[in-house]
Length: 226
Length: 246
Image (cartoon, each protein chain N blue to C red):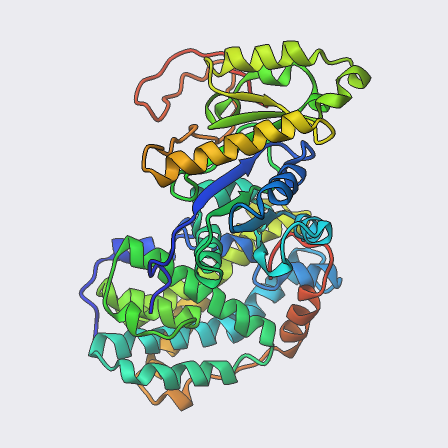
């Protein structure tokens, strides 16, 4: 099922300036830099690619699935989707953050573009799930949604790079430009998976990112919440 | 249930001002003096650490669970103005968890002279300067200094040690504010603390009886102009100008 929604709504949802508090997070880049695992541009590129292929793909697939279910009016599927997503995020800190960002996004979107489906989500829904529901409310397709969340995954970390690394911002965006076709491919993969059962959604892992998130929570000094 | 479900709404009072002027200390003073009179909560915005929260918790001015930190990703001005969602939710959560609260104090992460709270987040705000930051700061003006509901000039007991004429600084501030209230404060001078508490009581009273109108001190984005820049401001016309940038 393709959404008839226009590209403008997609841009609205994927714009980092959407006031939903996302700017407080570095997508795991700050802890990776602190630990000395990302020190230069080639490290940054590997980090961003690795993140898109793991956490990015999972978020994209789950948001596409939530969009698909919301479009069909099958909200009874959402709790299973939430449980499957929990199972794919080993770090309790990252689960907490995903739910916190989800609450924030719902709080913002409920004011920006109200929809009854927001009420049907639990007390603290995961961010990709809220994104999917928001996309459906704007008549966007699951693939659109997957692309938006992949873009956001990259944009958050790339914006943080300027604050936690010594970078030339043109170099950072050159990486994003090189990754564009990868994001298109991952969005297609996520959208295809979203048509199937929740249990079969992709489950790639990145254990070091989970461990780093736990360390970051205990850090005394940090710029970003995650 | 969604997050904007209405519970008991408290007066939301913002405390803004540059780093080191004593925002946390002002909040601690308000809590210490008024905690038996009002049900209070505090939300802090932290830039690098949870230092402000730790300070307030260690000061023991409120039960620890009534002091919560928002992490702002190094953008404290964004968190109180452009993207208030995190703070709004922290305030709403606190109002719900400790209902009924009378006042929630929101401390901005210390930023520069232009960072003011959006009325979307707070009902009223006080802006804190201190004498140690220099006697000319009040004269320079800016949105918080000129239009916050109250301007506090803090640490006035330090005036003689930093060569600042406190009376002069207060007069400058009053001129910059066209007569809006300015409070010279030192926590070592009980009469000034009493005046601060009276102001909080008065603003709570006027908010509670509906006579208080939240104001927006104004846009905060600091910007730089080259010599030939003839740019257009948000109000729709261009003009040459010489306003100070901090």
